[in-house]
Length: 198
Image (tube, rainbow, N blue to C red; front, top):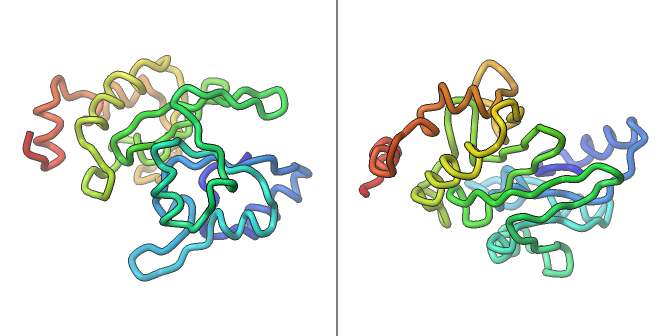
């Protein structure tokens, strides 16, 4: 499976072919065009629609993202599988556990595989996703960071959807110690730091 296929679908598929891998699905962390394709700020980004033209596979989105995904990409409900928050997908012999930490978007997903988490735009290295976009909810993001992602084992390796740091990965334990957004003791501090009145 591929996570958030966007920008250069041909390159993604060429890499799979070079590695002699068969694509069986795509996982979407959230509906924003820079992750799944569509129109954004006057530019058209290739993504899920082109992937489906080239390799018709199921797309796995959280059910709360369905209307946003349809609007952003034009996909039909038959093109995707709308999942709940605690789904597990077996890819060959490898289980992929879906986590639902809303906040950046209503149906944001993270994917946990063998002690590694693809965190999308929910958790970055030293930061977290924005909460000023359609569907965002700062209170939900606070609880997602403090209760859902913080509950993962400290040695879980974090691979964010964007890398604004010098390293390409971190760990949950390191983020709990150094990421200010995971360190706030209460919701009011978090909201104040995010520039949101609480």
